[in-house]
Image (cartoon, rainbow, N blue to C red):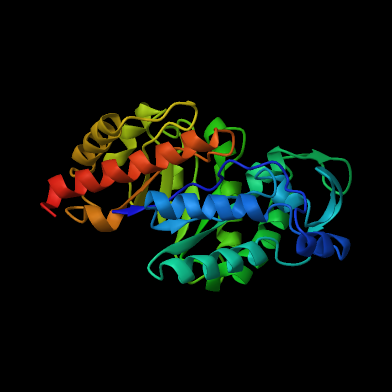
Length: 315
């Protein structure tokens, strides 16, 4: 079973230039104050045994990373038609990909896009669109995100669309599906959608989305276990509770995984191909956790997943 992450990792304070070379780069406007955070995030994921890692999403929160680089925004205020200007995450993903390949060519990188509905829900509409639920706003965001996805797809193994707002019921699922259809146009790699929270009420809609993987949280939302029997996609199984600032014990992670696997075995769409259809990951991003806790959670998650595999397949 593949082990991955949802995305974000704890961020160090912005680094100041320390040596002569860094000070020169800073004078030239070339010093990257987030590089150390990115390196720490990459190394932590590699050391913990993650198979498909992220760049740590260190440059800002999940919305600001995108709104700060799209035309039509002033901060998180919409002041004009939303348009794609240039690739936003490409540089960091290229760097992460090169870094990883130099360490272990078998490790993959995940591209992460904050979904159109979640971005729309987090901004203030001042001009051009009527409000945060304006379908034109959502679709213009989706068109911009599609261009981002096309720019990064050659450097990643999978692209994940983050849409946590969907579990709240605040957005029309037909419009959300239309937006995901737009974002995924022309892509030739696997696509995941991550929706945290309780997804039981929207799960049948999500089953119809044009994605390969449905990724949800089960450690902090055990009610979601009920969806496993009828999922018609690969399952991203969130098994560590990212809301708690304590390290999940291996035995509790194994217990949750075992419970989920027993339900999944009854799923006619998955049958016996557990390895190919279950992806192990945290419930959500880990940006707000202490760094030592985030690493401990990932390490225990990998240990638990590997022990479960041994028990299932006598590996």
